[in-house]
Length: 212
Image 1 (cartoon, rainbow, N blue to C red):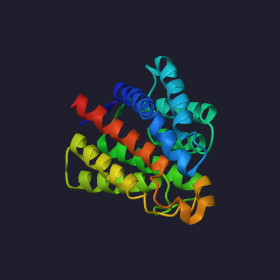
Image 2: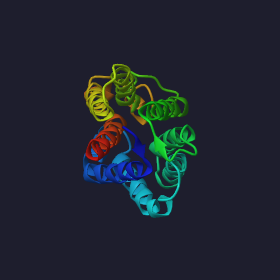
Image 3: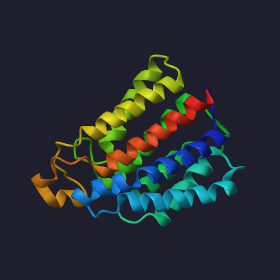
């Protein structure tokens, strides 16, 4: 299955819708261990992304994702703006001049997405961050595609892995970000970044499934 630029634009719209719907939840999760602004900030950023999409309709996949990253960096406050902004920009760099994207190219883009967050955040899996959702999803997607699973099913498996990874942050003690200041008191709370990361991947899986 080939991913088109129209599908990428739909993914971004669906992500914005999901973030908007779950804005209060994301903010409540962040209130427990952070600055209580994760949902508010991401909602503002992705609504700004949606407003920019009409001007991106005729551009290639790389340009769309890089422009999305820059928009997030400029409109999302806190740590999540630079993190997600860098992730989308890195993903876009792998898809420059691509009007269509193969499953293998999408995998490379998502690898770059995750690596961008690892580099920017200086974090690893198990430290109660968005990587606890993203890395299991990436590993699952790699394995599914290697087993010749079709892209919609592979992305569904990856989204489920992301959700499970987000749930698995509940007992963890945060080692990065504002939550790390709480030490042991950060345990018992679901990480808001991992939760929003799972929402982004779920939106991608839904978009591809709808187009299949």
